[in-house]
Length: 249
Image (cartoon, rainbow, N blue to C red):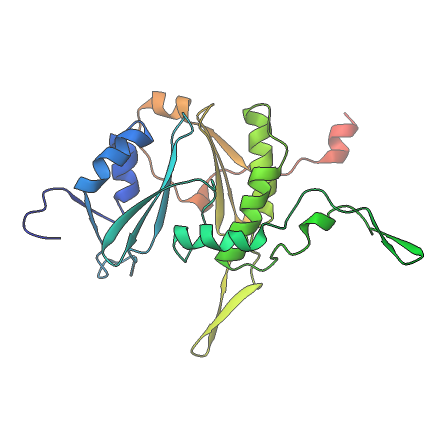
């Protein structure tokens, strides 16, 4: 920032600034060049790097990705409709060209001399899709499924599809580990949020309730006009359904 800058916000407040002032992606995009974003590494929350990625989508379907690289703000059209961690968004778009061979339709058989070798099952067109949990591999998996899954007919089907796609990039504890000194730490999917922009619903699941989404009707919450803050882990998640009791009623 410079003494001439009049509009600035912390990287931790950038999302709130954008969502609190602009109704559409178009409005936000027009205002972004005039805002400076900064980070304070002395905060109790610890270091928050400016290398975070931000994806903004409005009800009309417009979507952009905002990044800060080497002190410069960069804005991309979210053409992939997918976002994972590092590297930068344009790197991911270049990398996905390595997977143009992927297909939803597989070869069912191939003649080899006098024999006709048949496929072992469905899914052969997906051979080569990366299965590890690095951000680039998760980007490829999510983008492939996002663009080639059967198009949902309504918001409920879209919510179900998103849940299925997120399952393919969900990281369990102990699978993605690294060693920091003598300590082994594990990356994992701490929580998941599905945003229904059509019905103004927010579905949330933390690690301990991965298969039990809590649904929040934002219309009802906004109507109360009572601002509140609740940790994701403290939300009242629904308990699993006892199938036996349901069947024996």
